[in-house]
Amino acid sequence: MNSLCTIAFAFLMIDSFSQEETIRIQGKVVDSQAGASLAYANVYLKGKSIGTVTNDLGEFDFRAPASCMHDTLIISYVGYRSYESELLKIEATVFRLESYPTQLQEIAVRDISPESIMRKALAGIGKNYPVEPYLLKGFYRDWKVRESIDPDSSKVSLIEAAVAIYDKGYKNAKKRSSREEVFLEEIRRTKAPGTMYNYLYLLLEQNYVRHNWSRNLGNIYSPFDFYHLTEYKIEDILSQEAGNVYLISAILPSKLGHYHFYVTAKDFVFLRIDFKGQMSSDEVLGEDPIPWIKKTHQLIFVDNTLGFRKYSDRYFPNYLKLNWKTRTLYDSTRQITDTREFSQELLINEIITENVESLKKTSLFPMALTTSLEKQVRPYHSAFWEKFNIVKEKPLEARLKKLLEKNEKIEEQFLNQKADSSMNGKNLKVKKSAKRKQSAK
Image 1 (cartoon, helix red, strand yellow):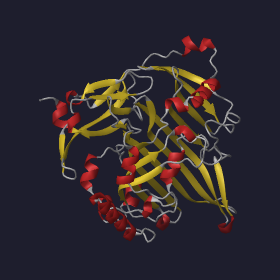
Image 2 (cartoon, helix red, strand yellow; image 1 turned 180 degrees about the vertical axis):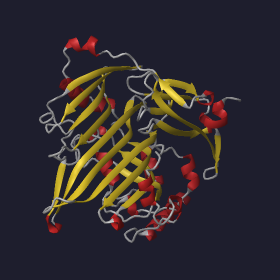
Image 3 (cartoon, rainbow, N blue to C red; image 1 turned 60 degrees about the vertical axis):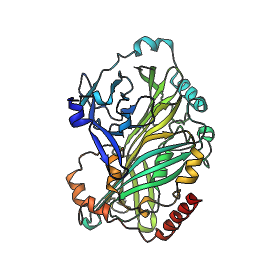
Image 4 (tube, rainbow, N blue to C red; image 1 turned 135 degrees about the vertical axis):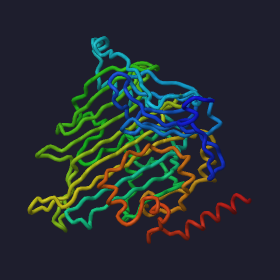
């Protein structure tokens, strides 16, 4: 074929790690009229569980097995007509989606209660979301940035991991004991002081549909706290191929932040939940006093996104993002000693609903809830990452790159990653040995 796609953007790659051929599509998704980037648009193969999302610049980098080269790629975004094309016929690098006309004025006269829409969506969780065990294969990225008045204390760390997530289903969404199990498959990370907290589990808790009991960070109320979040409002009614979608907003009592909910009008399903919060001049989103060092941590910014995609007549999470910023002040002078920025995102690039229990028992080793990813180590396989679906990286700010590569280039840090003292590499070898013996039997 002579198409531009085949030459440059949907080219085949021989993966030396798995000896499989991979087809790759790269591009950017924008509004056809304004040209604005469409962040977190779904990019996936029709009828299959393989997919990715665009980053907050609207860019994506999608890989699929070469056996899928004649499958249909779909790019969808709420309120827009979806793009569909056979993989090898794609010639575009910029995908322009056409928006549907708004229908708010036409439908608003029906006197729809936004709170009743929300309650119907909550009541329908068991009908619309998975209630049987399933596995999610995903990509996790974790940034931590600390900038201090002491330059030697300023640090940046990056972790990227291929994970599998086992979930028994949404039947027990109100129980705190009903958690997902995480299994680590591959990891690459830079050198940085470790933390004992597992931020991946914190990110999973931000799936409020799965964890009805979960609260947002700091003093931010849960999106389903109908007692405190009283200002629910239908902002718009959007269209998509499957029907209309309500865009509902809810404002925090402090006015420091707001939620946005995208709920289908036909079967009342949460497609997406966003939250953005920003401190004001005299009020923060949360405080954590540390009296023994006479300092206080303050939560000053939060930006969350939770998205779902339909597969096999159920809605599965396909993207979670949690960004937040804090600052630390001296109690006496109120001088800011440091600011910290945390960014976690989880892309689900494959959904498995068959032979789940068997796969879990024979192929995966769980990661402890209290063991952070900084304490994990695996051999670095660059070939694996060349064919693995990730959220496309954004250009790294110069100041962050300087901190991150202070002593060593990023790729060299990946190659030279070592276990921290709390990671028992010996146990890892024992588990692998046991697994080989079990397979031999």
